[in-house]
Amino acid sequence: MIAAVVLVVALAACYWWFHPALNLGSTQVWTWICGICLVVILALAVAAARSIKRAPILKKLMLLPGAVIAAFLVGLLLSQPFVPGNAERYATVLTTTDGDFASDIEQVDYADVPVIDRDSAILLGNRAMGSIPEYVSQFEIADTYSQINYQGRPVRVSPLAYADLFKWLSNRDAGIPAYVLVDMVTQEAEVVRLERPILYSDSEPLLRNVDRHVQLSYPSYMFDQKSFELDDEGNPWWVYPVQRKTIGLFGGTTIARVVLVDACTGETADYAVEECPTWVDRAYPADLLIEQYNWSGAYQGGWLNSWLGQEGVVRTTSGTNGELGYNYLAQGEDIYLYTGVSSVTADNSNVGFILVNQRTGDSRYYALAQGGATEDSAMASAEGQVQHLGYQATYPLLLNVAGQPTYFMALKDAAGLVKMYAMINVEQYQSVATGSTVEECQEAYLGMLAADGLLSDDTAADASATREVTGTVARVAQAVIDGNSHFYVTLEGDATIYDFALPDLVEIVTYQAGDEISFRCVEKDDDAATVTVTELI
Image (cartoon, rainbow, N blue to C red; front, side, top):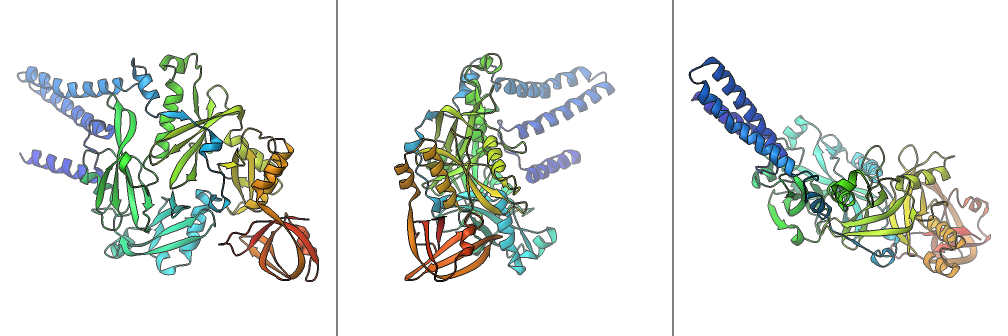
């Protein structure tokens, strides 16, 4: 009796600590069940060996845990794509329709283009954190860094976390006081202090551990990868997608619901995925969407074709360092996952690309008539253009520039700081346009498109939105911004501050007050303190 009580208490403690989903579609639950069944079978076998009289009964009892293990194996088998009918079901888990890039994707607005990647965002976040000594000694930044659209801007956001167990013991009552927000356009990072502290997070080891809290609140839900997001008022939330298995016991994973957890109070809200609030950006995890599209690409012609003929079989392109290859595109209020699509028999070119809305799961495929560069090839081309500087390219972002699908990437130095930018036409990828600013890069890219006959000179001029300025230099000042030299010039009778970035516009060093000067610059943004110069004339 005592042994049974101890066993029950031990199982309850294990369940509380590990909190697996109590769902037959959960492989973690089946691991537990099969493990217990094996222990029971072993115990019964030992008992049968010790008692010849009771052996027949004990051997019959062994059939029950054996049947449970057999049920698991049958469920596993029925989830496989080679089972008749399953390949077609896998191919339709994610429904993808053909789209028109020029009409579906808005023309790029460089005021909203993310120019840094996750690694650069982490560097900027650490720098912002270092400016607040009272936080540095007690907290660190969690490695979440979710990319979201916040108030119309692409940002990455991550909560603070207790630095270690002792810091948790001394700060748990007060909670986590802030989160870090990095603007991916302006490269500005700030530590946002909260009126209500974050009490539920990953760095809480016990009752307020957010994973444990939400799983025990919804015991039967199978949760996918969570994200840290902000609502329209800047309040922090944890977003938990809820999985549903559609094929056998374990196959055809999709998202059926979304559970939102208030990071400050622990209050939860449960929504059907199609009804979740519009500020939620990541209801469908990126890794799951990639997996779903690869099912579609592999099994659209049946399971046998995916192995033998491979006619029409495609897959998403791979990333760097063995990771999945994808990026994010902001459109309106939503975040879209972007990834290239290549044939399984030809890795060196893309046949198209997909954009998937991470809130709704809406998926569009855009074919490339002439094929296009893979993301790896585009990165190599951009790095080759500046090989004398040793810069490394970030994973490309897909933009619509004058109706042309375009790879855009930042070029970083060894310290991880963004120094230049590059643009490459997805279909005509032999030439690379670079610039010290986004505007300079765009000017060079549009000129390259016009020279290649992809755009008329008039269209390129209209898309560039630049103007010519002539005047007399009133004042010249020099500054170094993020390791890059800039000359700031004002003209007589003109209060505008014009920004000349080096080394592309190095001729500016020869000008001084009183000299006549002519140049081209972008149209002034009302919110910008300076105007970027693209060319000296």
